[in-house]
Amino acid sequence: MKRILTAIILVPLAVLTLFLGPYWMVTLFAAVVAMLAGWEFLHIASASAARPPQIATLVAIALLFMMNYFWPEILIGSISLLSLGLLVWCAFASPLERVMADATASVFALLYTGLTMLALPLLYTSEDGKSIVLFLLCCVWTGDIAALYVGRTFGRHRLAPHISPNKTWEGAVGSLVGSLAAAALLYGLAALLNGRDINMLLYPGPLLRWLSLSLLVNVAAQVGDLVESALKRSVGVKDSGTLLPGHGGMLDRVDALLLAAPVLWYAQVIQRF
Image (cartoon, rainbow, N blue to C red):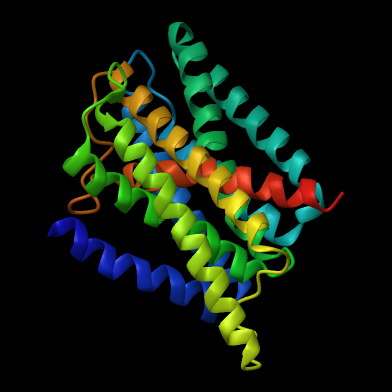
């Protein structure tokens, strides 16, 4: 019930921000999520030998979004500059025996939670950006819900027992079917609206294209979920936090999105060539 109530609050908030909010609000929303997820990752990293600088890393994540907002043409330079900045910070601020661990954890947090979430505003500013971001969120969320209930009901064969014992192949298939269904419904809804001259949703091209993208997004999302589980299990942590009732922490909630969003962005870039 906590999981459902949390979703009832967060899902409309995300959709309203997407369709009614200006670009700066979408960027701010993604930046806040990235910083919360980054803060939780730093706590996970602290369960190992590392003690990465929390304030410096969170400032770097915030600066990444700000620099992309004002100067998107220098994105690669921004990532390089901030990564090197964190490296220098750790070299002089951390105890000598911890410099390697702290620098590795802080730079990885910038990339793992900052750069990946930056894909949301990047997708938003692309052609038909609002529709594409909604497509991403629906495929990830629907797949996650389908995996949960199909896995609990029919799950018998473990998917990756050494990483996440509760995940099953049946749940993975259910997640895939859920994402495909979400893509088909969005495509049909867009066609229905467009037939009435309501261009709120736009999914050009054949249905097969969007089903293929939903397949790609779903696989990336499931891998992202397993990646976060592996990171937590490697240091003996169960949940990234307690921020979201029924979901754990923010990182637990967006772990699938952290891989799915950049994968969809790269797929969109490739399709332009």
